[in-house]
Length: 116
Image (cartoon, rainbow, N blue to C red; front, side, top):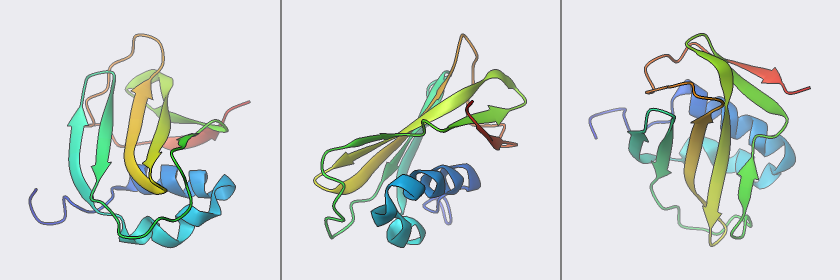
C-alpha cells in the first residue's frame, strides 16, 4: 500500500465509532488501527486490518451496524456494515449494499442515517 493508504478513511472511522457506542472496547484502538488491504466487490467492500497486539475483549464476534444505514447518493437503497473480530481483535470491516445496488468504493459522500 502506498503512503497513507494504511490509514482508516472517513467512512471506516465513522462506522467504527458508531460500533464503539455499544462496544466501548473499540473506542481506544480506532486511531491505532492500520489497513492492510481494501477490496471492492461491486456490491460492497472489505477493509482488512493489520493485526493488533493485544486482545481487547471482542472475542470472535461479528458486530453489525444495526442502528444505522449508510446513505451514499450513488447507492439508492443504502448500505450496511459488519465488523468481524477474531481472538478479541478487529480483523475485517465489511460494507455491503442493499438491493441490487452497486458500489466500488469511489463515492465516499456518505451520511449515517438512524435506521428506523
